[in-house]
Amino acid sequence: MKSFILNKNLAHLAVLQRIELIDKRLKKLRKLFGRYIFSKIISKHFINIKEVSKNYFKIMEEEFHCIEKYIYSKKNFLSIGAGIGGLELLILSNLSNTHLTFIEKNYISKKIKYGWDESNNEGYNNLHQLKNFILSNKITSDRFRIFDFNKNNFPLNKFEVLLSIYSLDYHYDFNVYYEYIKKVMNNESILIFDTIRPDYFKNIFKFVEVIKEDIDTVHKSKRIICSKFI
Image 1 (cartoon, helix red, strand yellow):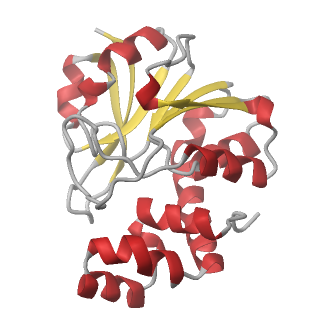
Image 2 (spheres, rainbow, N blue to C red):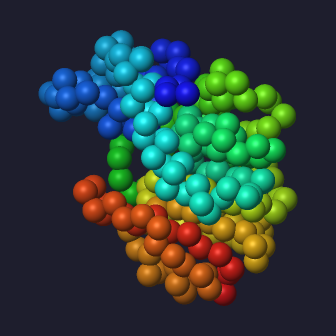
Image 3 (tube, rainbow, N blue to C red):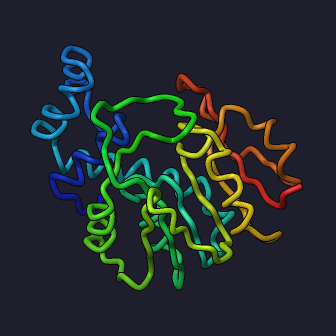
């Protein structure tokens, strides 16, 4: 596998979630016409689906390799804010007998915004498209579940691995999920996410390790792995 299977709607959604998937030409058009026109028209009708698929696969493969050694023996995963689920698809494809639960938004905000949203009001996903993406890439329906964030019917079983790549505490405050995460983690569970304030979590978890540093972005974030609440 060197690329994902994407249709036009999935490619468009992927671009809205990860602007780095488009080429320099489209980035110039985005800057020229603004984010609203870009999200409604340009990103929908002028993207190269094969190129987006190839770029998305490459980025997700790098993300998978970043965390692979921490998760290779795990079976039960929870992902918060996964987008269309490229990393999660690779986990399901590469790690046998795994099961993955998604918690996601089911709407796209009228104007795409990038940055910190304290209450997590922004949304850039479609749960039907997320399900379609996983199934289209040859994962059977018994290996994953999808929960709508706004329906507040979160699963309450314990998870071995909780993932929130460039979502939790990167685009919105960790406290949005704090109480819930405490309920679904035990002493053996690990939480992997990106943050601009890694030292803050040393007051919340007994174990905090930086596993990746992203110094070339505006937020200069660090990916951390945490376990065992204090």
